[in-house]
Image 1 (tube, rainbow, N blue to C red):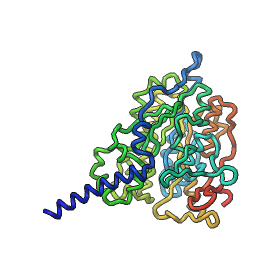
Image 2: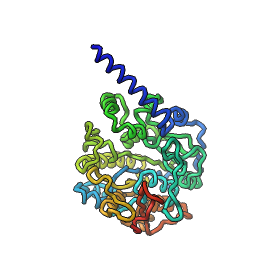
Image 3: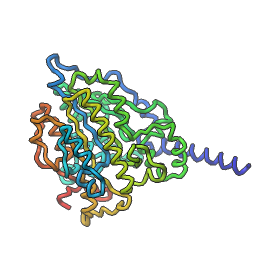
Length: 404
């Protein structure tokens, strides 16, 4: 009895110390500061539509980033059935790339390049730089750390043609108070939920046995903070009035087939499988993503049939079996790098814009194509995409894949 009581006291002390450490020392997202950051500002400077602008003239744009989803041919090489999703999208008017390649092999850099409408680092003239806060990379140049009044080329260019910018938060990129972005919240306004729905904290504690035990016991009470499309389905139906005038750009960063791994019906796998990025678990997670793609596509096109829609990976997979074997810039493992640099890319665009689509089109050239398509003439589509590999332990860290 005494031993049991002693163990309970020890358990409570351990949890308290762990949480305190994460808040005071680790604090990748500065938990308490973020209570203010995540509060939606009612003073957003949203742009009013011109009186003569109609929905047909200004289509709504829905840009989905599917975290970790490789290209059609990459998925096929890894034994995943892709014919059904490819035919579904083509039958719905999509242009589907077979061999698209991502701009970068890291989520933050790929998303940053989309927001900046260009390659944010090339290792020669543009370098990847880190600002360290408590030992962690934290730089306002990179997604998701944009500051309140920061100039963001994508958002600014859209503003110039009277487009509003919307995004939905997830555990990786929560809402902040950027003056030109309307962000839809999915998290509770409680410190408890911030802790258990924080991507960085989860990664930090992921190898902790006690964290896994707590997490598994509380799964029923905790939001599935990675299934962003599922949350967006509800947000979409609740905000149709805001989208009815056309001219809205919505970014949805869907945290899958990234961990946690899922079955084909999108249920998170049991521990420890949910944390294992194996071929088998990736296949079922990819099938879940395809299920979500079909669901949200039907919902959007039913309400706004003239929409522009993009479904795009930020990078391809790196499997548990291959982890740490990518090599170096001097001795690269090109098989694994080509696996990682591949990305899914399908887009529903007007006929007039299809001439700028090509099979290997990447993230940067896709967003430039979309902006040019809606009338931003100074953003020119380019017929060649670049791909960069990130080697975290090297300098300059970023290398063009063609130079490896």
